[in-house]
Amino acid sequence: MTAVWYIIVAICALAAIINFTIAGARRKQPLVALVRVLAGLVSLAAVAGIIIGKSLNIPHPFLDARNVFIGFGVFVFAVLLLPSYADRSAKDAPKVTMQQRAARPANATVRLRDAGTDEWVN
Image 1 (cartoon, rainbow, N blue to C red):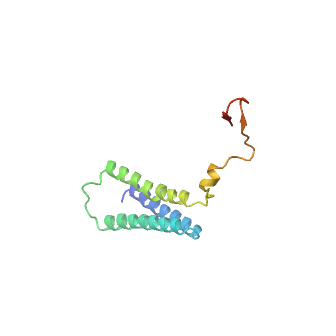
Image 2: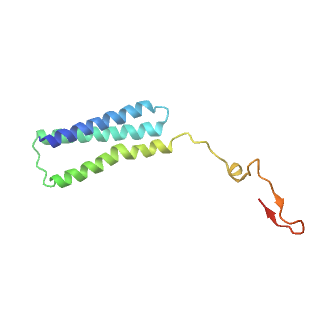
């Protein structure tokens, strides 16, 4: 294995550790924990696939430097950035009802512009 493969394996293992740690910290949010555990498992599968493939010397005709770089970029996006979207959507945002959104603020006043017309002004 070249130094590039060692770096990729180390980053994949680090991504797995990060995802498992965040999943452990977000146990109260089951969807976030599930997404993070799945991303961690994908990271570990990539580590295992690289190590087994390199130790058995399996030839890969499509693994030139350009394809490895593109695949690694997709991998980082898939296991580090996509799970963060599940984390954002699961936040405890206050739920606003339609009546609350449509309600006027307490300091709003309605008055007539001209006494002779029925035109409302906010």
